[in-house]
Image (cartoon, rainbow, N blue to C red):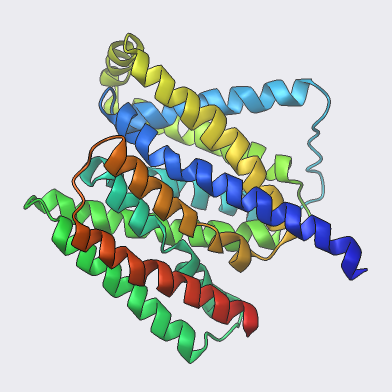
Length: 303
C-alpha cells in the first residue's frame, strides 16, 4: 500500500515545486503590470481572464463540477482567504515594496502554516520550531529595515505582505482540510469565481469611472497584456491547479514548505531582470530566513 502511495506523493511534491516556481515569477510580472494599471484593475482583469480559461476547460468535458452535498462553507472560506484577501494584500504590498523583498516576506508562509496548525489543529510546535520561527522573523525584520526607502508607505507595504502571509497560511490549511471532498479543479474553479466577482465589484465600487479609463489606458500597453497573460493563465490557472492537486497528495505543511522556492525565484528575478537594488548584506540576511523556514519544516516532518 505504501508503494502505491509513494508515486502519488512524488507527483504531489513535483506539482508543489513547479507551482511555487511559477508563483516566484509572478512578483516580477505583478511589478510590470503595476507600471500600467491600478492594483484593482489588474486583479479584476487577471481573475476574469483566469475564470474564463477555467470555463473553457470545463466545456472540454475533461473536468467536472460536483458540488451537491459537499461542505461549501469551508470551500467559500478557502476562496475568501485566497485569492480574495491574499491578492488584495499582496498586490498592494508589492506596489509599496520591491518585488525582491516581497518574495522574501512571502517565503514565511510555511512558518505561518506551522503556527496555524498548532493553533487550530492542536499540533503543538516544538522548541526547535519556535527557535526557527524567531530566526526567520528576525531575518525578515532586518531586511525590511535595510530596504527602507524612507517613505512611511514602505512599512505599510511590509505590514500588508505579512497579512498576505497569514491569508496564505489559512488557505493552505483550509485547502488541505477539504481535499478529500473536492477535486483540485473544483477548488480552483470556486477560488476564481470568487476572485472574479470580488475584484470586479471592488474595482467598480472603489475606482468608479476610473476603472474603465484606467483599463483603457493599460490596454494599449503590450507589457500589460504580457503580464496579465502570465498572471492569469500561468500563475493563476496552471499554478493553482498544480498546488491544489499537491495538497490532495501531500500534507499542507509539506506542500507549503516548497514556498521557499518563491523567495529565491522572486529575489533573483527582481535583482537580475528588474534591476532592483539588493545589497550583499541583504542577500546574506536571506540565509537565516531560508534556514529558519527549512528548520521549521524539517522539525514538523520529523515530529
